Length: 129
Image (cartoon, rainbow, N blue to C red; front, side, top):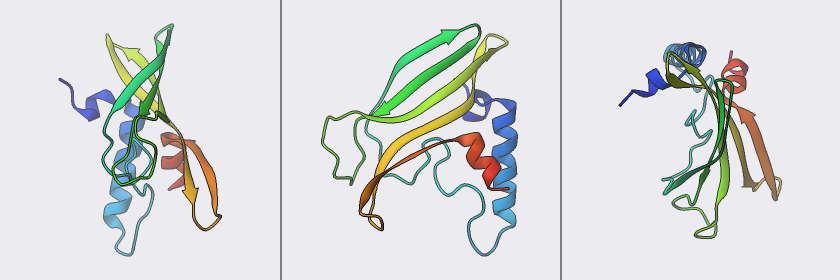
């Protein structure tokens, strides 16, 4: 069993460490990431993950990870929701996460509309600088 730190690429580890260090210095609020960096949110309990649509080509892998429900949300039970796509690369016979792409929709009460929030972890980490 490997730790999360061992599963992340050196670039992601460095960016997450820099983000944590910047937050540790901040006394008046949040800088950088504002939630779970792996799911891009502050959702409740995720009941079930489904990994599908895995594509492996020349030492690179893209894997779609879906969820089947969030505690406290009004989503239909049993419905599958797009969540993230993992970019992985193989190094020294192990797969490492290079980036995480977010894909999900939510209802924005201020706009009274459903909004898509697409992005990726590296983009979010670099935006917080």
